[in-house]
Length: 205
Length: 205
DNA sequence: TAAATTAGCTTACAGATGTACGCTCAACTT
DNA sequence: AAGTTGAGCGTACATCTGTAAGCTAATTTA
Image (cartoon, rainbow over all chains, first blue to last red; front, side, top):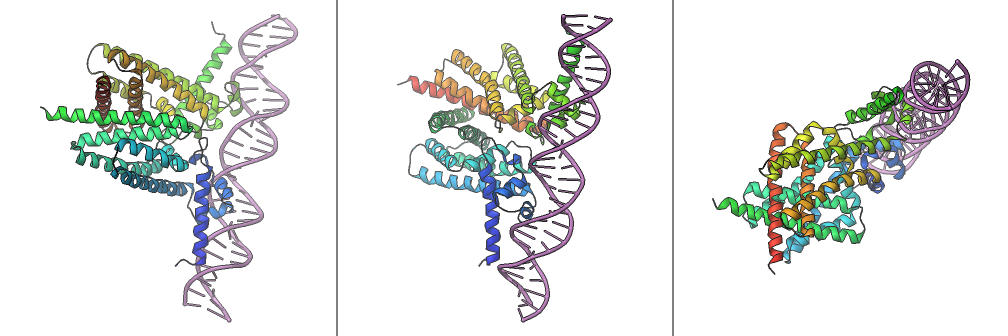
């Protein structure tokens, strides 16, 4: 049971994280936020920030962690829907786009800091995305009987295409996003078909 | 013939551009550079900067333009080599990695600002990359008899995979870059094979 | 040769930033 | 009940930023 004090602290901490998320946009990256701006938005004095985070970096890593959580929830959602049958690729893309749309800023920090200038950030994002890749590789290895190397290469390619499309989709209107999603589906099918072909080629010699 | 005055001005302008390029690194993006830093590196007074560029943004766009130039030179180089025969994919990847290695900071600004926070920057980079895509799509349409839509999707996928690998390769040691390049070749083959398969599927109905 | 132009400089200023220090007072511990 | 802890605050400071204003001296133009 949390004391009234710890409760209030948690609330302020959340306010800080939310303030940071809310300031993100197409034209505002995390690294361009200042400690004072975040504190202002969260309605606390700049110096009070330090009661919750050592510095902005620590705040950012917390946000990336939350991003990872969103990613994993997305995977679960996709799996559930896929069990009901239908094209796995189509279902996955639709799920991705839905989650992207309802958590744009979560994806913003992931997609931006993935190639950002802070090594710890890049590592943290890479770790989260690695989940995706290895899970997908494992799945393909099992259901499509791919060799481990091929499965890995395939999974990486799929994830690369999906995340890249995600980055582009972030600042699009719904109509354009639809076009993008359709094209993405085609590209993913290319990779899947191609991996299959390469697999057969390897087996027949 | 350039007057002694215009000559000196051009020299200083180059010093500014070079100073900016030299300050780029894995942990330093263009948007994190300040006007004063660049001026300092170029050994001119901060206020003299304005004799050459309206602001940092203008400098950055100039740098992106130079990046586009590098990209086009790369394409020419790749085409020349490919004419001598061999795997087009392998040759292209090797050429890309070579050019990347000898112009890391040119690629840094392209790869970073592609998903950066400045709309003009994003547009400028997108324009340069679009050259790549449409040229590639046209080539595939002609030589592999792809439908325009499929050729476009395929070209986009290829370029996405290449640039993504490029971003990852930037901060790698030579050995790891080799592994990455090999995997990239496999992924590109997947896309090519898969596009072929999709094309046949469409034709047979 | 005289006048006009201009690249680069120095000085100056207002605003923003991160953070050190010390206070208060509500909440918790003993 | 008395004492301790700690979240949040206000003040303060050194540092950095972009850029305005005006000067100098070399080059260019007339």
